[in-house]
Amino acid sequence: MNFHADYEDPDAWREQYRDDYADDRPAGGERFPLIPFGELKPRTAPAYTVKGILPRVGLAVVWGPPKCGKSFWFFDLLCHVALGWAYRDKRVQQGIVVYCAFEGAEGFRARAEAFRAKHGLNGQDVPLFLMPMRMDLIKDHRALIAAIRAQIGGATPGTVALDTLNRSFVGSESSDADMSAYVNAADAIREAFGCLVGIVHHCGIDSSRPRGHTSLTGAVDAQIAVKRDTADNIVATVEHMKDGAEGEVLVSRLEVVEVGTDDDGDAITSCVVVPGEASAAEKGKGSRLNHAEQVALKMLREALHAAGKPVTSNHVPPAVPVVTKSLWRDYCYQGGISAGDSSDEARKKAFQRAVRSLHSRGFVGIWEPHVWVAHDPQA
Image (cartoon, rainbow, N blue to C red; front, side):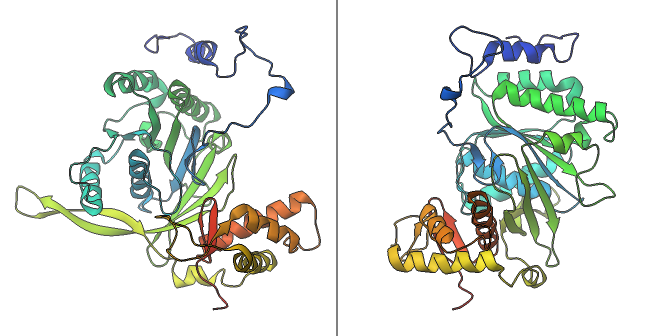
């Protein structure tokens, strides 16, 4: 497969890629395989880069207004991915990260040093590579793919970040054709490496959605909104997850770190992202538990009373009893979490919503498969 080829048809090389590397092709080698129903089985390999936040493969958009901290937050998240560190209490699949900083690239040098200092890396190698040049992704994505292949020693990146869309885009963000061409270019990177492509993007005049044509949001597998709250925290919310739960909320804040001295003798500073707490105003928006949340918390207490035991884990508080999430779910189903509708689908949705809400608000702790009460409003 020659990714350097300059095809007249922009999509021709993608067809060739599919022809060469389709995952589910049967032994006969058909271009359009038909997979029998009996062979449709779920894959057991982890399907996430960060569980509940980013898929393992696909397109993701991290968006928000200017100066909301979205680039700081995403860079910090991907540093954890490169190192294979859990992000807060989320499991992570370690992988090489290529971070394309199309604007403000010099600032990322200080961010990297601040991350090293904060986390005491002491010379530890981090498989994250910065690409500091602006480009027209639609025109240059094949060259970018070739450059990545040539410079990371034959390895394959797990994530390629494009920060920001605006600085790697030539055309009109409101144009269906132009935005679709950009999505196709990002998709080509995904297909080339079988990786996650994360796009950092702005909001427009309408601050309720990403800027530009809806063909972008229609194509992504995950969409994360980032904003500042009244306490100046960075609040990241999973708005859309194609094959997973939505509504996860992560609250962070920026901490200033001195990383050196410049040639004038002045301090060089940058910021690191650290866990934060929602502002009082944000907490007040959802302090009362709805029916499903009340039932879920009550059933978790009952499950813990009946079967809870401490576990040895760096991610679970010591001496705190835990149960499995599946046991908690069974208790909730028996406890009438879906009120008057007892169908399987209604119970499943009610449980998922209650779990997301209780977890994001700090009432329960989760480290799969374990769950526990982190803060009991009745205590």
